[in-house]
Picture 1 (cartoon, rainbow, N blue to C red):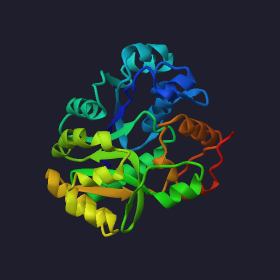
Picture 2 (cartoon, one colour):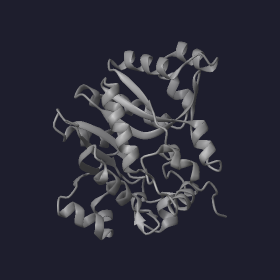
Picture 3 (tube, rainbow, N blue to C red):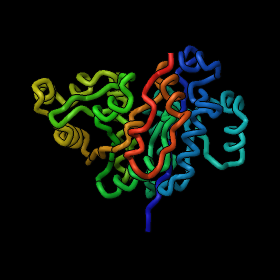
Length: 280
């Protein structure tokens, strides 16, 4: 019997001056349209269609923003999805949202700006996470497949002995203990765009290994697992779009362009036909 996940979607706003929200003329980034659909709705639709997801919890945006989008407001008021008030930081929001889920439930954590998320990607990650086991599983994509598919975008990558990897904003929490990592996350979230500082949290010896190209993905996760007392694994996803989130206005332009002809299916090779050019 397939064990299914509770999905937690982080959708808190970054403030009234968020450049993406301002460019899209919407009250918060999560409501930024991709085509005619707010990206948070795209994420919720993908989760609803995935075989691995049982229900979804939306953490944020603020209630005034939800009321701005009738489709989202209807889903919340009809209890099709659960809504939770966001907290001051992503880590606090994640911890608060996961604390509302029964301890026996599996949790998939993602973000509202993961606008190209689709059921095949979700199911691949969730099923792979169950096979990997441990407390926490993170999704990654090789930087080279992302750059090959989308040469006009720049993604933050951690360059390790066995290759460069991009985060995919997909995290599986398989045990109640795994949820405690949100407390550790508070230490690292301000460095999320600086790989060297992230590595530095693991100690100077790890930094030296990293700088000399001697640190592997498995080695980095083993050090992290030891430091926080949990078992963390990574799953390498074959979908380059898994590494695309809408963090900047240029990301929004790129994702809109891709979404016009994006037809995901169960075969990761479909990514080879995705458009790669950002319109002027």
